[in-house]
Image (cartoon, rainbow, N blue to C red; front, side, top):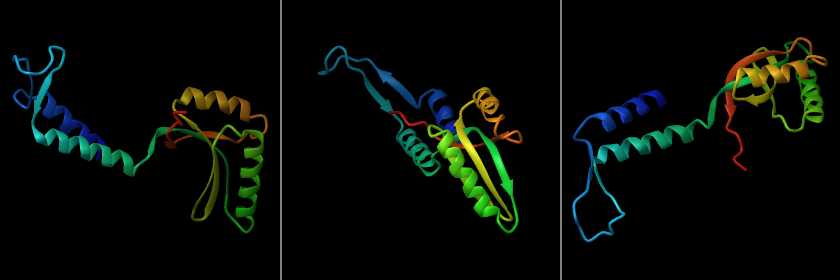
Amino acid sequence: MKLLIRCLLLVLLVLPGFTRLVAQPSAQPADSVEIIADPRIDRLVQMHIRANQSDPTIDGFRLQVFSDSGVNSKSKAMAVQEELRAKFPEQGVYLSFKSPNYKVRIGDFRTRLDAQRFLVELSADYPNAFIIEEGINLPNPF
């Protein structure tokens, strides 16, 4: 959906006649520019904004540290989650359930290289951890 909106926006901006800058003498100050654009461009921009607001994740990487199914798998997963939060408070730790497995994942890495660096640090305590590609939370701008 996002890719379709971006492509449509690009096509409308590239095609001649849809947008043009007008540099005619007017009552406006000399350093201003008046933009006359097709109203469909504004609708596409709004569609793009709504699409991004509905999915607040971006493509990235996490490390899967734990996966188990069975009788005590939920309590084991929660214990691993709390242990990771205590050891790495700066990293996000995520517990998920997809029948029949509980999974614990850590990190919001933009690149595989960043995930690999953290995996080296983590592998002493969790030798079976591995990198997965997943939607990650947007970084906090502050």
